[in-house]
Image (cartoon, rainbow, N blue to C red; front, side, top):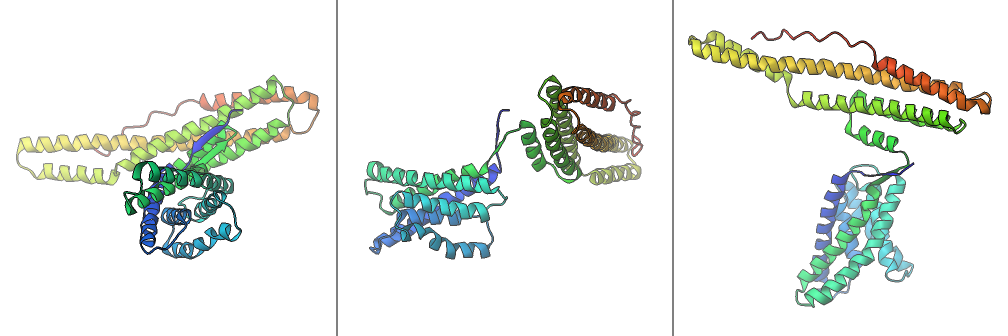
Length: 364
């Protein structure tokens, strides 16, 4: 099954990258000031520390703790006499690990934090090499403090780009990947139903894996995938209706209609009264449309519940055929697939409900 690769929390990565760029530039100012005082400093240390402190999106207490603890942590490679450029890579890895675990607005998985830390560490020596090339080929010692600022800003940028690996999510199942992505876009009851559907689909797959490989099993897996994709489609439609309804405040429209009607009743000019009544009637049609959307949303949610219940029934049926003769499981899989397919068709082929009556909230 092909892998599905997704980029998570792109906005968080972009914001932290810009902040790391600024942190590297600020560290360059400190290094330039130390150079004027004839104080030798570790460029890699300052670049990584500045980028990490700037990119961490935490409250002031945790930032203060990082300000105290991060320099101690980044000095571990020097204490252990780790050679260059491995020492710079280790500093980048340690700093990215701290930021990934504590300094993000979301909670990446441990493997994602590890991947981002390794990626950031690998990019730090490359960033220092780019700085050296910039100093030799572009600045040639003529820009002084400005060259230092630009060079360490580049190192901070390379370090932050390496943390991109912590935002990458790899799924071995495209259906589960779609469900995980959809969960983050939803809220409320629909989100819970999608999460339940993804869990049930995974359990059904585990039960189906016990069956003998063959056409029956393939047919069964296809039916299960079709069922869970139907859940996702219903959830997306429900989310679209939610967005449309939230974009318009029905109470405000209702108040405007009443205000226009009151003005129409109070005016003595026939033309003005007619124009106000037409405006009220137009807004009344909008109220009717919102009412219809609200009822459609309720129906979609009911269909979503029914489809998740169908997945639950499929899981129970799969558990029911767990035992028995291994040789007969292929035939059982085919029978179960047809049964589930017929249940889905009965659900989708149910008689459509009567048309919604026109709302009588507004009479033109």
